[in-house]
Amino acid sequence: MNPIIKEITAAQVKSDVTSFKVGDGVRVHTKVREGDKERVQIFAGIVIARKGNGIHETFTVRRISYGEGVERVFPVNSPNIEKIEVERESEPMKARLYYLRDRQGKAAVAVKEKRYDAVAAKAAAAAAAAAS
Image (cartoon, rainbow, N blue to C red; front, side, top):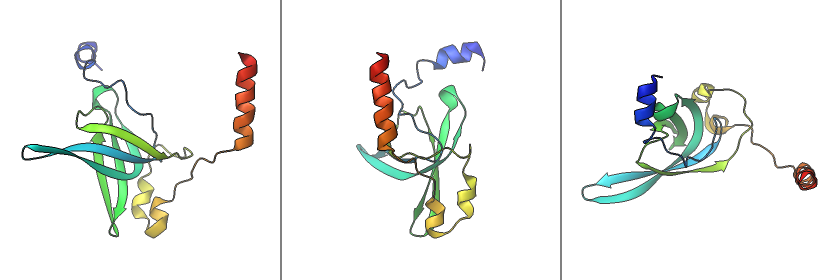
């Protein structure tokens, strides 16, 4: 990217973005304006793609609503996104999960979840404590 454009857009890039990756189940809280009122609407689903960088970075969230697949593309740095919550983490398998579009039923949301291993977590904590 051009360094001049990067410098101009640096002020608009959010610094407090939640870290998430492709395959994670997320809840995106977006601001919706209806007339003079503003409310927060939640769009929950699986992140199937993440593209771009800097001010142009976007991510695509897919969910099944009443048996129909619905996808929305959100800019990561949009002022209309209040927050992004990660509901469940996944094991990274591919950079894009477009193959989920062809699946039906439960298979359409089947992504390998990251398992929590209590023994490994305890060992990692003990190693970190011993190192410091």
